[in-house]
Length: 289
Picture 1 (cartoon, helix red, strand yellow):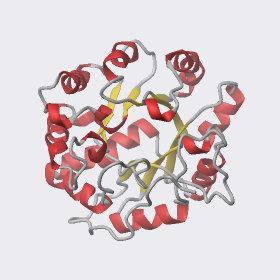
Picture 2 (cartoon, rainbow, N blue to C red; picture 1 turned 90 degrees about the vertical axis):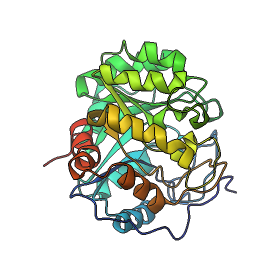
Picture 3 (cartoon, one colour; picture 1 turned 30 degrees about the horizontal axis):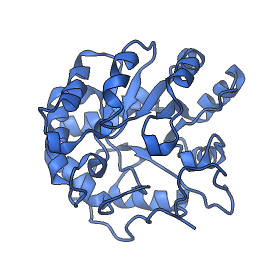
Picture 4 (cartoon, rainbow, N blue to C red; picture 1 turned 45 degrees about the horizontal axis):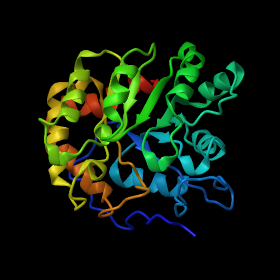
């Protein structure tokens, strides 16, 4: 039985059309479990959220490209993600959970099929891989131009950033580091994120307003100042994503249209919108022209 709530069946329409080739850089595909079973040791059991449902969301919101973040509930079996990539007509890329025994040939195959990075969870309830595994993985992925994708939180971010800055590959911080919005833009954790504007290999996803919010109440307005500050400080290395279908939500279930409209309101300049939604993902995830 699922232990996560499903996404909203109806969402707010987008307030404005998105630029061509706009990319949702963070979402998951779950199952269907009858075809792609969940891992026996999974940290959570979501309701099915198959690729067809994701395509419907993207049509509604206006996204033509996307980046699948392979979920922990499927473990290192990448079948569900590779199936979505194969069906995505070249418009999708992915970030994987990589088997520790994956060799160069396996990584080369994944690269050909659209994988561009490896994700590591440092949030306690998601079965952390640990820094040692990350350090062993980096030399294998570096020749392919991949990055590491970091799911951190308020407790783990401070210890991770000094290590991440030493890596020979780029790194992406998911969901604004899940720092506590209640501390405001002057909080130590958020200031450490802002300081990444001076590190050329650092990227931040201005996603997961609900995961940063200290209230958990839609529309998660207490987290908006953090997104606005990042847009001002380092727009050339920001990525936006829905986080659909929002597994393990503990407050209000996000409305993906509402989340998108918040971004559009905080980023009114068309050129800046294109940079975040099109140009930045094109550069990091290597979409074809």
